Structures are given as C-alpha cells and as structure tokens.
Image: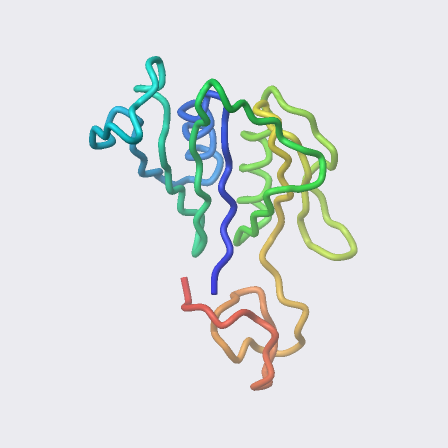
Length: 166
C-alpha cells in the first residue's frame, strides 16, 4: 500500500510545479483540461483550458499529485497538515528549503534537531506547509535491508522500510 498527497491549487499549479521541480530536482508529468477528450456529460468550463487537470511529481520513491481546481470550487490550505518530504542528505534538505521558502514563511530553519540530523518547516508562497528532513533510521549497526544509506542496523529486524535501493 502507498499513500500520496494530492495538492489542489487555485489556478497557479503550473507555477507550483516549476518551483517543486527546482526544489526537488525532478520532472513532473501533467495534462491540462484542454487535453481531456470532449464529453457532453463533463464539458470543459470556459477559462479552464490551460489549468492543470492532473500532475504526477516524483520525489525519490514517492509521488505527489497536483492539479488546479475550477474557478467555481476554490480551495484553501488548512493549518492541520504538512506535506512531509524525506531526502537523502542535509544538503538536499537545505537546498529544497532555500528554494521553497522564497516568498513563503519559515517556521523552522534547516537545522539539526534531537529527532533528525537536518529538519526544516515552512509555508511556501502558495500556502502549502512543508516539513523537510533527512531520511534516517534509528537502528544501530549496518542496514540489513540495504535500503537506507544512513541506517546502521545489522540485525534482520531492521526498522527501515522495505523498499528497493535507490
């Protein structure tokens, strides 16, 4: 099973995609409303042709989905959730943080905490809250699963997620 966030924007999804591609050094795939097959049951609303209908943004072994809403259904980001991204190194965390904070609001600078070697929190210029951190394992020893390069677990009871090596 896999859980992925689906982020919805008010007509500025293309701008968000460009920012997130830079921040996470990735390339998105998307289609616009104008790309949808015509349908009398679901006609394309005038003025929405250039909006993003569906976008996949790969980040490591995960995917974030994005789209624009239609003008008659505006969205507001709430304060009860964050998009959490785990990256390989502190340099990756700091780089993503520096890009995402442009025009946004910083809650926690990229820094070492008692639970993570490099952690940051911010709200980007679109109003989306992010928690960015190093993907870490709290095991001791060498990683038995071979998944997490930061893991030091030698036991077969490794706590790292069972995912393919990157």
